[in-house]
Length: 146
Image 1 (tube, rainbow, N blue to C red):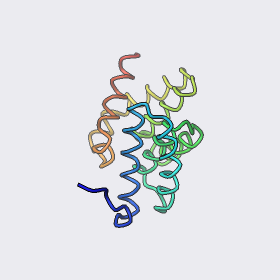
Image 2: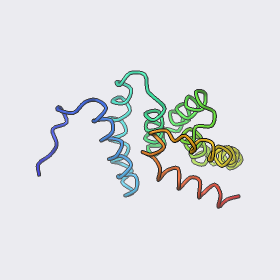
Image 3: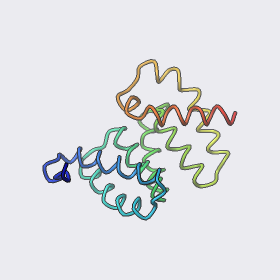
Image 4: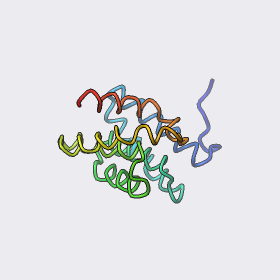
């Protein structure tokens, strides 16, 4: 199969494709490529208009893996301002705190994450399904550090 024609994709499809590529590159340890694609992806997401919480998490994760911790924290704060117990907002905030070496702040967000788990998963949001692996990994790590 040939390369995909991105000009035929919607802006949302381009944003999702870039997110997936950046996460894969990050897992592969290809930081230079992560930073290159992140510089493309963040403006693509911003061009989508007002971002929902799922898209804010995506931008926050892109910013986090590309070392743009202020952007990642801003998106975590915005998610949590709209929904104080949103699992992805808590995960992103804990990850930013961890990247900054602030273990007490990370622990505080992880306590909130664990406390919110049951209530949030009782009425799962579409973004929880999409990012189930992130949620599972974050909850396991948080519970393991207790």
